[in-house]
Length: 218
Image 1 (cartoon, rainbow, N blue to C red):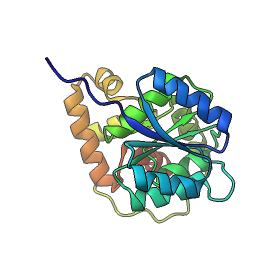
Image 2: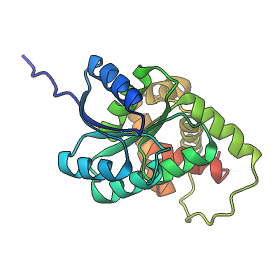
Image 3: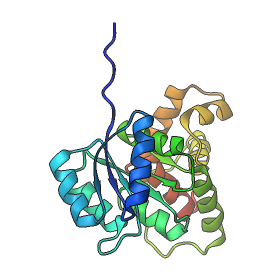
């Protein structure tokens, strides 16, 4: 008889207590253990360092220290605790800043709680989840913008298959969807993504998607 897996341990960071309590209750019903809550960045840093959660669910717009700044500090200080941004903002700048600060995923507050849970699970597994609506928005807006005036690090060229995989990643597709679209197994998808991350010199698939679109790779 296999042991029941331990529930994921989460710290919620949001300056709206009613929202925090409501989300905590919903997450508990989904089997996620909310071990602490914080209403500002300073408290969040202390709590995460003390309690070492699996995942930090982070709001962006808070008084004082922003969610992006808190995320950046958490990635530096407690890299074992992943950060999932849950925000009302679908603005390209907010999403890009959060991902480049080290967030493992980005979902919207008006989405279903199941999307937050999926983001928490992905982050805890060392993967990344970005809301499909956010991915579509990023793809559309970045393609309309002028190329970013940022000197990107040199990269090893991607193969044709890797470009196909990256294009689907940038559209917010999961491994199973990518495999079905390209008629390849999920283990092959994972291998391609590992190679893509190494070549793009990024930490996760969400950062890969942002760079792919920003730098016109796909």
